[in-house]
Image (cartoon, rainbow over all chains, first blue to last red):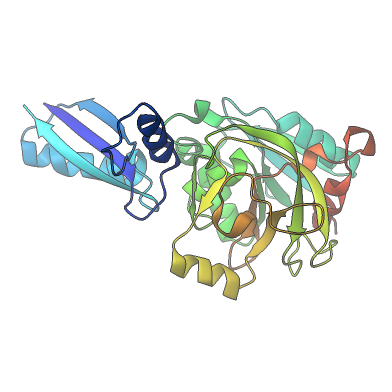
Length: 80
Length: 223
């Protein structure tokens, strides 16, 4: 089983990397971009009995280490 | 005074920190991150700058879970004095010993230069030898010093006198090198025994190196 965790800055927290990428895209002529957020993806290979158990475990990982919930949100996708 | 300086893989300011405090007449021991106990006669823990665990994931995120940090957390919870400089500050934020979090600098650059700081509050042990409104010249060197805290948390910091240093120019006007909320350079906890700042006072202890303003700061912990 695999878990795909996406971590990104919370809405409302200014994202300096996203802003820089947005600016660069604009300079390259991609003017239709309204906003850019840069996050990170963490892919975990898991031994787990069920998708539900895997998701619960990964959520604990996110809360303790993978995301800093003061400034970051995360999403978890479990795939077989 | 007896000072303990923890050292993580990737720490690189431990010897500067030791040198600075020894110059002020303190006894300094460097403690490896696997140590589980802070010596009982310790008067101050200084978490030094560097790139603990390569700054992987987030600055300070992995150091937070090292055995020595568990010991430092219980030392701080019992009222012990803890000072975090640069990466040390980031570790204290990740450990929730101080509120808020660090983001990449607004301009995305690693900023390394002398920076003026304004003493916002000296009603604490760390800055008690400084004066309110005093301007200090202290080096900064970081890529993630863009301090963030949400609005309610910021208000609490103001209400409790926890914002101790802000970035400014030589005349004391705001001059923010990294995008930090309200130009915050250093804070303390509500109990005023845990302090964190991005600038490096240990690098400003001799005039020949540009400034000795750091001495007044570090001397705050002298008896």
